[in-house]
Length: 401
Ligand code: PMP
Image (cartoon, rainbow, N blue to C red; front, top):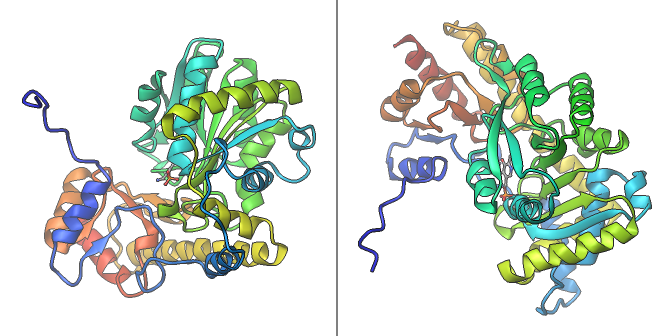
């Protein structure tokens, strides 16, 4: 029956982990995967998450089905986290929100909803480059995916002129995907001033902004600072779509907890949108899993635990920032590695686009047992005091080769 099924290519990111696992050298380093690692290179369960699990357990929770749109207390608190407690759309009861299977599921619900109900051409512009999964995800939802310029190879920074030109040249009413903070894979975010300009163009061209916020808190260590773009757009009167993930900022990767929301004109419109979100979700997976939403809600709904969580997110962000500083010092100062390495320090969030070429990344894997994606992206969270020197020396050798 399946004779004609061709073998598909391995996933670009998960394939790196497979190669890493097969390497037996004790010096090996995996910088491919986007999961936080502590100072000892170990997966990290946040202490606030452990406490939240105890609270959930102590409440003798049942295993009943959740509603189609998930745990209501959780989605209410997730919306507050993203939009802010003083947000007018929240006060008006105009945010339609559903729990989702983490950020990916939120994006997919958004894609499916837009493909059915967006009243204009179903075209979405994504940054070049973007998180690899955005492209098949929106394509499979039935949207036409196009790119807008984002990365400037020469400066290893934002191609702001290219970005503006491409958004201005997009057809009216096109959907535009924006990474709310900690852009993946480049680690380069617009400044607040640049966000304000982007908002103006989006308004002028009547584009529809779809925010992917997979790293709230992870960029700066402050959840409200990282929500700047989302809140600015909403305050400017845009209606937006928003995908949230609690994978990174709560370390709940495998629990698959996230949310998708749309801001609407009024409670009556919200109620109609709610009803259609349910119609999208019901035949996909019926209703979402319980455990992750309960953990996230235990944190978001408890003042003390919330403060603890915020300081733990800041701790993760700060460790990453200190690794950036160290790596920059090794390359730029101690080893005087050819090239300019300032971007390592100025980039934001878990990832850094190093500027290493595909052959250099190959050489790093083969000669130094250092694994990253072929585009030269590294997860800063994979670096720590025990491996950063080996990494810096290996990069230095690869660049000089
Ligand atoms: N968006 C971006 C930009 C991401 O980097 C990721 C995770 N790598 C996601 C969405 C989705 O992650 P998850 O489904 O695990 O929440």
